[in-house]
Structure formats: structure tokens, C-alpha cells
Length: 420
Image (tube, rainbow, N blue to C red; front, top):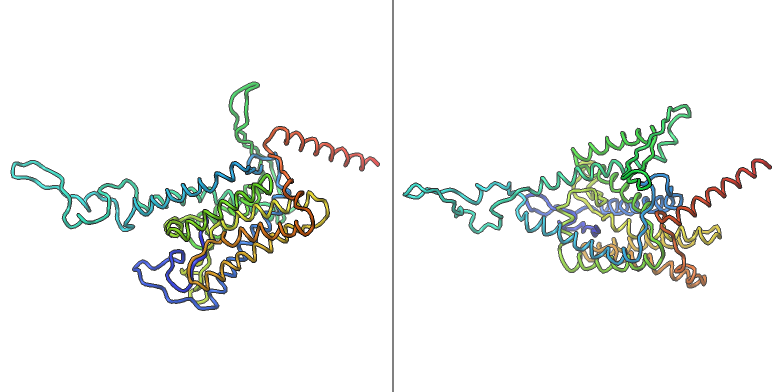
């Protein structure tokens, strides 16, 4: 889900407002600059490192490490699916739970009454007859958010463990007892046996999982913004690394569709803002604008949706892999698109600050991330090469066979060199 940047000068929907409904005092210029500078930096880190990791993404080693290839059909359907999901969440939070303080008790809106004949009937409580509350409620918003927190608790631990594993491996001593494990689930038997899960891991991965669990417990108990950002950064980096576009045309379709999606749901309705406020999950990066005044207990947040990082990020990662396919030892398109992202996000912050209104970041990111590389390709005469570049699906049997042949060829070449 994409959510626009918050307006620091008023109690905007994304910055949040106090429980009593009173507006927060304006943030200081230093606090605003620190908040948005930090958001910009946090957005750049998963794109840069996720793109690098997408190049050497292990294909076929583990099922979880295999990138998910997005086709043009997937890209065309994604904005529609995202819109339906967003609208469903909005109706769930806004309509089904109109009053957050409502506990779901039937006795709050209905009462029993005995007639003279001794019969008992249920009538509406006159004091709540005009209330928009529903007469019966199975779950409260707090319980739903708790369920979502548990869901993202598990996903966050796995994502953070996968993110820090390459970095943590450098800190283990050479004599560390590193044992190998394999988690294998199959379906059927004999020739019809099919692998459902084939995950290989080692002792170092288990240590990373334990460290990530500490962050997960911290997030689950405190919902602290630092724990939220650690999970958000892990989700973003994994998304850029493991979600692959099969070609540039697919990327243009995906970004173009979400360009319209973001503008409509932010400017056309209050749906995006309402869901961003109600949805308690690490699906956005946040940074307090009053950090200088309140320290780590600050609570006046600016935010950036993870969709504004991952969606342009997978396109930038594609351009990096295209750069490598040209075999010119240059990363022209990657650096161009990366600079375009910085420009687009900076422009989003500037426009938001001028007009004092939340902005859909993809409104500025999509034209920049697509337009700048295309202009460079036009100048270099490589437009045809850019749009004809195609990545095969690693789950396709032909692609797997081809990668195995390439690995065997590389291994044989290495042996020949050693023999010489």
C-alpha cells in the first residue's frame, strides 16, 4: 500500500492527531528537516542494497530465495487488486467500526424490557437510538489489529533474518560450528512427487532468526517506531531483491497503473489516509518530527508507504540488471534511475511542504524513474536494447536447465584453469 508524506504543519491524517482531537503544536523547521531527510535516506538504503542483491539472488538454492517474476498480465492486474484491497480495508475500519471506543457489547445499544404480561422483549436503548454503531459486533478494531500484528510479527522476523544474514556472517569466527539443515515438504509419491517447500539453512541463520525475534517481540509489545522501521526496511529490501520484472515494458505498465491508483486514492478520496491511520502494521516507514524535543518517545510522525519504495525499487533493480547484461562495465541506467528517485521523492517533500497537503509520492516518482532512463537511452541510441531486454522466469524448467548448464560450464572452466 502506498501512503503519501504527512503535512508537518497541521494534524494531518497521516501525521496522526491526539486522542482528544486537539491539534498538535507545529513542528520546528529543524525537526521537519530531520524527519524528511531521514525518510529519504531510509527509502534509498533498501533500493540500493536490494538492487545489488537482486543481481546475485540465489536462483534455485532455496524456494524462498527464488525471485518472483512479474509478467505484464500481473502488472496490469496489480492496481485493480490493490484498489479492491484498499477499499475493503477502508470499509472494514471506517464503516464496520465507526467508533473506536465501542467495545462490541450488545448492552450498549439494546436493552430488555418486561411487559405487564411477563413477556420479555428486546428494544433499542433510547439513549443510543441515533448512534451509528451496529447492534452486534463480533470483533473490535483492536482485536483485528492485534491479529495483523501477529501476522506481521512472523513475516517481519523472517524478512529481517533474511536481510541481516549476509552481514552477520562476517562476524562469526572461522571455527564457528555451522551445521546445515534442510526443511523439505513434498506432495505425492514416486514419479508424482512434487516439492512444496525446500528450504536450506544453517546454524548462522538460526542465530539471525533469534536476533530478529528480539526485534519482533519489541515491536509486538511496544509498537515502537524504531522496531516498525526495522521491519519496514527489511520488507522493502526483500521486495526489491526478490520481486523481479521480466522486462522494461512490464515495469512501465506496473508503474503507470499505480501512478493512477496513487493519485486517485490520495487526491480523489480519503481512503488512503484513513487506512494509513487505522492499519497498525509495519507497512510504512515513520520518523518523528518532534524527535529533538521528545527524544525516542516522540509521537508526531511523518511517514512514507513501503509501496513508494518497493514499486520504483524493483524497476531500478531491473535497470541495474540491464546494465550488467550490456557488459560495458558501466551502471549508467541504474545510477540515472537512482538519481531520478532522489529527485522525485525530494520533489514530493517540497510540494507537500508548500501546499500543506499530503502528496501521492508515485505522482512524482513514476515520471522521474521512467523518464530519466528513457532520455538517457535515447541519447545513447539504446532504446531498442532497453525494451527488448527480457528476463526469464527462474521457475520455468527451461530457465532452470539453462542456469544449470551455465553453472556446469563455469565449473568446468574453473577446473581447466586449475589443471593448467
